Amino acid sequence: MLAACLAFLQGGAAAQLQRPVRNIGLGDRPFRPVTDAMLEKPEPGEWINWRRTYDGTGYSPLTQINRQNVAQLKLAWSWGMPEGQHQPTPLVHDGVMFLPTPGGGAQAVDATNGDFLWEFRPPQPAEGNGNVRNTPTRNIAIYADRIYVTTADARLVALNARTGDLVWDTQVMDPKEGYTYTAGALAVKGVIITSLTGCQKFKNDVCYILGHDAQTGKEVWRTSTIARPGEPGGDTWDNQPLMFRAGGDAWMTGSYDPATNLVYWGTAQAKPWAQFQRGTAGDALYTNSTLALDPRTGKMLWYFQHIPGETHDMDEVFERVLVDVDGRSSVFSMGKLALLWEIDRKTGKFVAAHDPGYQTLIDVDQKTGRASYRPNTIPKEGVEFRFCPSTGGFKSLRSMAYHPATRAFYIPLNLTCEDGTFGPVTLVEGGGGSGPVRRINLMHPESPDGLGELLAMDVNGKILWRHRTRTPPNTAALAM
Picture 1 (cartoon, one colour):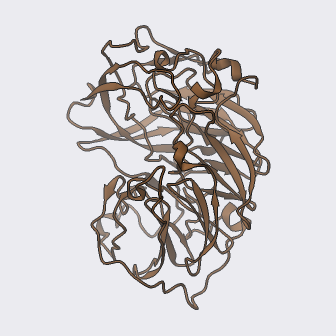
Picture 2 (cartoon, helix red, strand yellow; picture 1 turned 30 degrees about the vertical axis):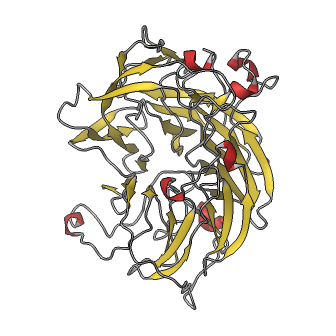
């Protein structure tokens, strides 16, 4: 069956409740340090990766909840989380639920009854990306006896999983330069892998995916998500200097395949959004791409760019789902356009792109995988035009799930279009950003009575069913 994770609403602000003032900790309750073997094959009742398993499927093998009894589910307990913007995915290990909180905090509660165990509160940054409560932390990582949390002011911290006490604190980047974290960490064989956002402003630096030593917090490697001048791919930005190569934010967490020993990570679009705003119509590597990296060194083994020179804010940054199809090891992803991409995860070669038929912007060559814009869809300064989806995307951060029995993906979609007008951007240090855009969001003509859809699509692109809802989905999907 398929269910939606409804316990943790995304993007809302919880009421300010009376906060616990003293950490209780786990005490003498059993707690096993999390090993590499556990992360590679979690027990059925454990949720110790962002999408439960390294392959990013969001699938639970538990069978207690089924079609016959799902309607009988009732609230067992509730827990008031700190004020702020929430988009959390909890972890569950040995009966303890670990929760990310806004800005880079974490809490632990008893998963059976919601009783408080401990809390780590991030300090309010003195400067930079200041308001902790306005920055969601989407997920956290667990490894050995530590919880790893990324923060709003671009730090990576390790906490004692039993007590919530701080073990180490590493300042990864300078928040005064705009750098921040919203994506959580991925733990792979003693390396804590994270990815930055806040890379939209013009400056002489770029976004990175990074690896840190799990024991010490020391940086092991960093890989740029932007091809620099003089490097392979650098010419895809034409002659733009490094300062004006913005974007490539990696604001969602990747996946890991022990068989290939590669992590697969998505990157977002170039900034500003429109080609004319950023002064180049080049492909702008490695934006809107899937990157395959060695988790030990950060070396890029291959990349596949989904939308070269993207020009409407159509991210391809979201979860990577690792599925084998007819003996082929594949990585699937879906960006804002709702195209389901299949790439060979050993070689990076294009396999297929399946379009459910809602978007109006691009065509994909089914032999090469090269995306190209349809006529009259590239923005011009000050000219309003209609496109689907809106810049919010059909698919967004609400992750899809994969069910191994049905061989299908279950995908939350938001069916909107937009009348957009893009304005000019001055190429100066400190400028950039998304660029000025006047937006009027519209209902999609194929769904005039509802914004939401749950789409079931199999690995070959066949649509199994669509379920429309009046309101858009606001959680990830869970397959059971």
